[in-house]
Amino acid sequence: MKEKYITIVGFNHYYGVVPFKIGKKIKCVKEPNNPYDGEAIKATMKQIGTVGYVANSPYTVATGTKSAGGIAHKVKKKFTVEVMFITSSKVICKVVDGFKEKKGLELSEKEARTPEDCELAK
Image (cartoon, rainbow, N blue to C red; front, side, top):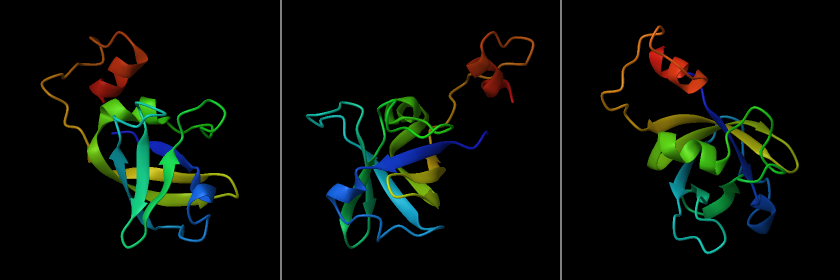
């Protein structure tokens, strides 16, 4: 499976960039009842709680990463990411655990009709 990356933002509303370290694992949890964004996914760390949210706006999603809405259908309710890069406004993470299983949809490359289908065929 191709690696998936997400952007964590909003950390300045919590503890800033301080809790984030390269290689640190972060638990992400979908929040379908979030009053501001039905696709919200919060980022949490043991002992301190919420540290930010997965970006879901074209203005905050880093190039090459998935938005909360773009990753939501590929992961379980709870999934784990690993910090790869840190900037003053964004934390780029790789999804390392919690992918949904593909259920009975196996396509050969000849049967694939869209770029997403091609990913399924690999």
